[in-house]
Image 1 (cartoon, rainbow, N blue to C red):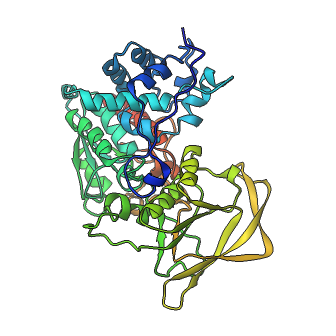
Image 2: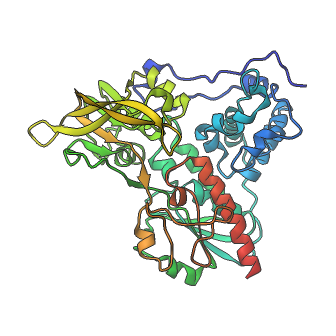
Image 3: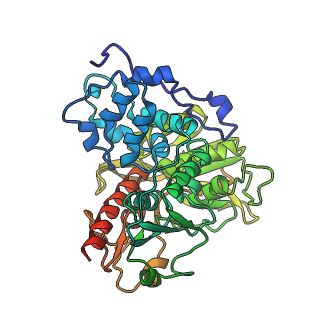
Length: 461
């Protein structure tokens, strides 16, 4: 029976005053005692509503039961049957709007901390297990995967577990996609990502880096060598507002700023990748990427960092935990404000950002209240650096070099939701390359869906 008296266990974290000056992981993870207490809160519902809200369908009550039995390795194996990246998902998956949102314990209190328990199990496995992943006998079929982000790695892992010979083609010099270049070290240590990738390699997955598909090879050329291709190339093309001043020195896309910081380690004294040391930074946007950029800017030495968002705090799309952590670290929030131009300091650098106040009207197509400008409410926010974190779209390179591949007007590849099948026979797609920028776990779910469909496609050929 679940212990109804135990409250949800708090996550140990670094002190905000200390962590805002370093790139070490903020959340420290549960102790064994905390994990056992939290696992004891699970009701083990027969209908498992939490599982139905997990994009990769992890058997959550089963792995939690193994924690209560202190069989942490078996708990890991249960998670690993469904997820190729347990340690990653335990850190960055928005469980609060997925599995935990359906937890019965949450009806009259706080839900079981499913994500934190997943992280505990994965970290325990990585620290204690020495057994190599079990490699399946080959089935004689070859599949190519474009992109080594969450969608690509998930697809590759599931196919490898079925005996497929899988090769992943990654454009950058290191595998991991957005997990490496987009998410900061203090939220997702890169050693964790590489450990997960090494597990996939042990399953037989091959990874080729510096392979820009559409330049080095085309999808058509891949189809001459492989029986199917999965496109999981993400959405790495940044968007801008097209307002005056965006070409000034000191204006970054969040993609560039985070890539320089996370992948190229611009915060290290020996980094070969320069990044402007700003005094006052304005980050435009309200999603997780905006929070990541703002918190990185603070750690890089900025005296003042402001989030500029055109709606109210209630409409912020970022995870509540990330917003809270940002506030604790001293990030300012300039709500109901929208940039209209970036000012020149007279020398070609950012000299401030002119904004206009907004007010909310009836909901728009997104379901959020529509922001409208308040005439005559312009004001100037001091800044010597502006980071645009207003979204991304898929790079058009693959579309432009692949005949017959249908795409949406905004650039996303057209693919069937239940299979990932595109307009080209033998070509499947999923993740941000199809939906636009979304979450890690949704991309992983799309990769799993496509892996199942690819298996059926090849076996039925």
